[in-house]
Length: 421
Image (cartoon, rainbow, N blue to C red; front, top):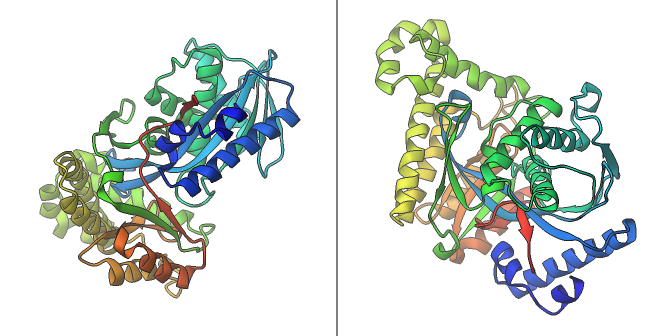
């Protein structure tokens, strides 16, 4: 395997990382280093290589929790793994930069003492796979993670579907389908890890490329891959980490679905997906005092962004990238003005996301697109940047947020899978 990589057998890498020779050489070194580490730590020769991408939310900001639609994409920052069966019932994982851990698969029950650990995810994924009739077993694994934790690119979902792909190929001849892998990862995070989450992150990481998901029936979401070659546009996808502390934002995040569902309830519905904009506007005078104006504004955002996902997908399928970019900007302004998840109301002095959006508009207006990325209030923004403005854009943002705060990405077509050299 190392010989193949060192001899320039990198066609598989080009699909994941692009054609830049410097980048490909760095990735080759990354993989060979990980294989060497595996050789040192584990006594196995029959290895397999795996890659699982991070993901970016592209359309539908805070729509999933009200049974809405989203548009997401897999990115070229990934978690990679070297793995082999160990013919025991114990999973042994060494992640670069983290303590080694083991999971004994003789016990496949949730354990609250194990909540919020990687071991809980491995146990949960193995439990669900076994319940569904798949084979499971012990394996040794070394992982190198390049999806930054806290970047809004879903490092945890990428890890979950990476483990699913490993078990699929080591024990089941790769029979686990991508969407099923995502659903199993979500189950493990909900039940074994102790964190409620939607299905967008896992699906984008598992399927690859651009995907749109419709959560109208959340127990049976409709997943569709969007046929569009992002790389051919010549645009870069730049995610900028604006910093900020997420620690005290739980109430802010909780207020979003609460506000939206309060408006829906006034119309006898459970969630906003079940009502129309016309219905909301009709009852607005009667409910302003009861639910508050912010809740009504957030309802307007949901109903606009939910439809915008449909329109964005249609534009991409017609190869109308200019129209798509215009809708990205519209979505961003809707999040700012109506959804109001750009800065916390209890700390108006700190507006890292607002400032990053302002800087983005100064550089990109009329030529690119920019919007808040993910939950909001702190963290990351997203921009689609033409190549002729890329260096200026990164220089402008990193001047304020520091070197390395901008991640220059593209949408990769391959989801979590085995890499065959």
